[in-house]
Image (tube, rainbow over all chains, first blue to last red; front, side):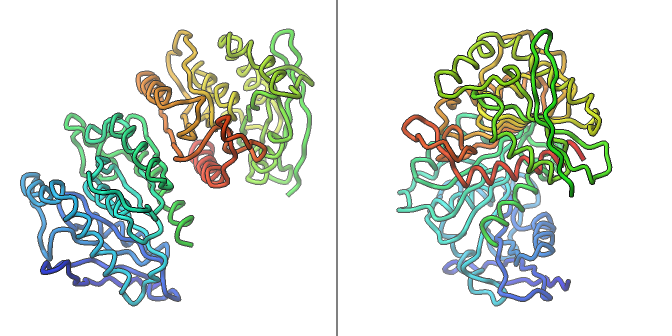
Length: 239
Length: 239
């Protein structure tokens, strides 16, 4: 094993973005790739840790950047300000994450025919919107993602298989949103799955989430279960 | 590997029952055990195939018997007639499946502290009711099970972890039943999960189910996904 980490600049129009690429150079390439879409704070160490774990499993992992090179929030107010333009303009969101997909497909270690994407919280919404856009990739996995439809014209076909890993008590994605997204993806003809975990709040994969009264809390149990489901899903769609 | 298959008689009061035990004698015991609860037709070859696969994985698998030694349906009308008394009398159902649990715990190859149960269709309902009864086992897994609450006095504590593997288009367990069971198990404080598969009907694990217009159809995809989730769950609760 020989893990290499690199920062990779790429662009969405005039916006300079910076991703984090991590892969095992000792493996014969090209490698299946997994994009990792960050939560509302921007690309951070949490994403890098996930990328390293995926690199151990043989994937070229790419922590993408929705906000612009070096742009990160330092507190909830800044995070919110960074996220808001994308939540309000889902066409912008779709364009931005499709730029990451295009960038990854052009990277030397990557097998462009075997790409999936995963994301956390806001990043979950991003990868679901990537699937909704009809993008050409194998699958997307949302961890405690927002499930709200984007209101855009549906893609002719949703190519990506969809896995949603969901805390059933997540106040940001209540049962009515679960029913709505199930209906949406069924009508779209998408291959979708949703794993709901009881007694589980928002941000269940994030060890720093410790605000059950605010609706977000780490769950060791849901973290492990969802990680297993991720690996099984990647094995299905990328091998 | 040295797989042994045995028929095992046991009783629920005056009723003689006959289970199918399958385990690998070459493994050092005692072994973790998995009860398999049959669909409406009674204990059949489908159950035996699942038991053999679990035996390969190192479990003592026990195809239980809800109906009585040799009692099986030969057509939907007979299946319905066999099932109906249990669906109408959920206390009887709970007693009958608890008898199987007690029998399994007393079998020589079995580690009585490491037992789980799984079931298909009506058998899914049975293992959920086993959990609902407060029975002392590690976990239960329902495959396209009926989700209706049993209306009995809730157990003081649901000890078993619960995994429901669910076809989202199953007409026997519509979205309102999913919401209701999520609420029920949340209020009961149970450790529950539900995996919903899009575009998936009732009986998705049964290769002989070929009646999409009747709401039941085999799905190779959901069959494989649910089997992986089962093995992952058993690994979590029984190892």
